[in-house]
Image 1 (cartoon, helix red, strand yellow):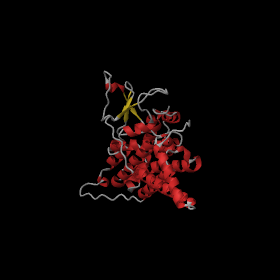
Image 2 (cartoon, one colour; image 1 turned 120 degrees about the vertical axis):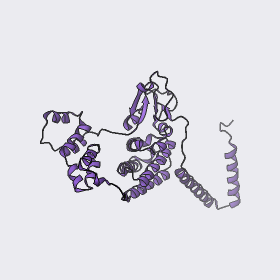
Image 3 (cartoon, one colour; image 1 turned 60 degrees about the vertical axis):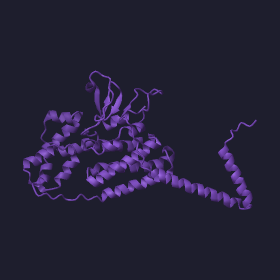
Image 4 (cartoon, helix red, strand yellow; image 1 turned 90 degrees about the vertical axis):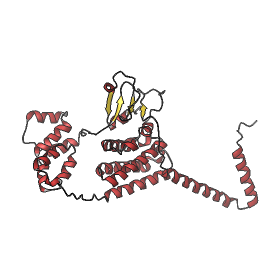
Amino acid sequence: MSSQIFHPFLALRTVKRQLVIWLCGDNNDHLFVGEVCEFNSAKRKKDFYNNNTKSQFVFRDKWIYVQKGSTKERHGYCTLGEALNRLDFSSAIQDLRRFNYVAKLFQLIARSQLPSLSGAAQKNYFNILEKIVRKVLEDHYNPRLVKELLQDLNSTLHSLTIHVGRCVLVGNVNIWGCRLETIVKWQQELNNLEIPKQIYNGMSFSDLPLHMHDKILYNLSDAFDIINLGQATPTLQALSENRTLWKKLCHFHFSDKPFCRSLAVNKSDNVDWKLMYFSLLKHYPMKEQYGDTLHFCKHCSILFWKDFDHPCTASDPDSCLMPVSPQHFIDLFMF
């Protein structure tokens, strides 16, 4: 007895094909080519549809359980892609406190974790990324960060599709070609972005007294923001070159580094602190600041946004909470 399993659909298709071949006589080769072309055309249409479908993942619970350790048996879903689907990043980017956090997280995923995402998670990643780009184009909020994100993503995809090989990416190559074209289009839109000048009838920024300009500069933690603000007026240019300002910035970001600590002890007045800042930046990462982050409950091993909360069983839930940086978020799913 044959070990093959009878499949009605395949049997019907075989009979239909044989009938068509018998009716067409010697045109079998043309028939086969036509069938292949029809199949490829249908596949391309399906790939295009899948790439452009804006499917959203809606879950009632806005948290995810993170399994401790690297055991094969895990409680529920515990992958980076599943976290990306469940934690409602689409709503998070609409909150200015969380926008930079999500953009930074997506940049880290673009640099190293993209191949580890499932097909559904990759689609969700690009859908949310489109919302991030649209928000910048509409609200002009932090375009530099999103430009860096797209540049890293572009470089990663070129490396994966050309140098490493397409086999590491989930999905059809046509979809990834469309995504690369979309990324280039977004980059062009952001490069052509012009922020309109705001006209106020009342007091403007330049009308503020000098001590308030100075205080604003001292509250900036990003060196590029200080440099860009210094280009606005000659007065701000002079204030942005203040050595004390750059010394404070060095201590804020690199105070725990041995070299910076030794300079602080010596109290040297001959240090070019602006040059020192960019020298240290080549070797150490900046201290990250976010208005709001994801939180991890050490008691329940649950990752969540504080607004949504989670069913904590601890007697003092607040004492168990730990803010999660973008890099820590990725590290939680490195098994």
